[in-house]
Amino acid sequence: MSTTLEQPATTPAAPLPAPVPGPRRLRGERSRAASAALHGTLVLAALVAVFPVVFLVFVSLRGRSGWTHPTEFSGFSLTNYTQVLTETSFTTWFVNSLVLAAGTTVLGVAIAASAGYAVSRMRFPGHRPLMWVFLIVQMFPVAVLIVPLYNILGSMRLLDSYAGLIITYCSVSVPFCAWMLKGYFDTIPVDIDEAGRVDGLTPFGTFWRLILPLARPGLAVTAFYTFLTAWAEVAFATQFLSSEEMYTLSVGLQTFISQQKAEWGLLTASAVLITVPAGLVFFFAQKHLVAGLTAGGTKG
Image (cartoon, rainbow, N blue to C red; front, side, top):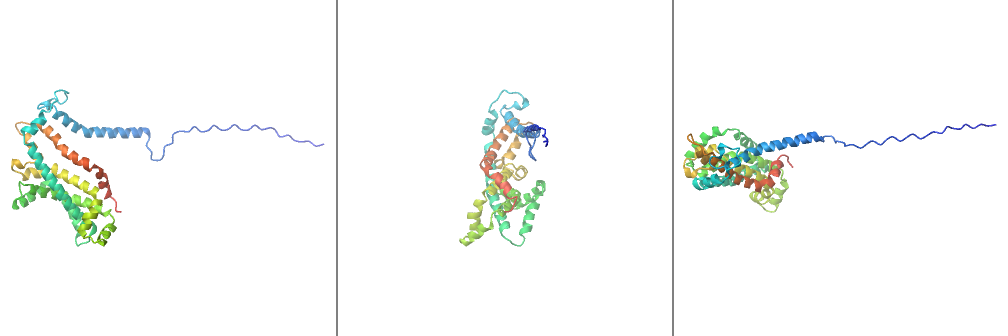
């Protein structure tokens, strides 16, 4: 007689509940609170940067005495702009500054591009010390340079002239621009120069026809920097110019402020008008600025 053991019936275990999917933050990813704080800080910084410009425009539209009550939102007019353009020598100052800035930009970029390309491509005695000299001369403050430059220009009879100030502004802007363009030329392959020589181009022909078109972003940055250097310069122009017909904007605007009176309305209107050429130069050069500023950081 055999007996069979019956196995007790087992009930299957209940399945575990599936985990509820939740937001997973990748490593290095900011949380919402951190992102909100960052954007809030950026907005605040932008408002702080824009406020002086907006306040300047607001005061310039309030008339001759609008600056005495800058918080009032009434009495807007173009009186200050009309008087600046018709009753002062603003147009003469503007033309003088434009001639100086344009001349400095053309001459300064040409010298800086030539120097940067020569140091980048050619190996001649003293090419490394030359770049260090460019860097060292940038360390001297303007107050130290005024006296020797004044004596040099005086001996050359270039005081109170366009040529004297253009040479002075180039001495300030060329060293920095040469350093920047040297780094940019280093990123352009040397094979292009060799291909130009194979095709029969001279070194200058290679530089002019092949390298400069490729260096357009770097040239745009240096041109923008050189233009602003000459357009907004005050110290040299104040000391080297003596006749009123040669005054630049930076010198002419000082005539609105004296010990007896201060024409703040005219000064604010002139300041707004001065920003127009600089804004136009930035508008046309902006697409090249980022590439030109970052390309010299690495050597390819």
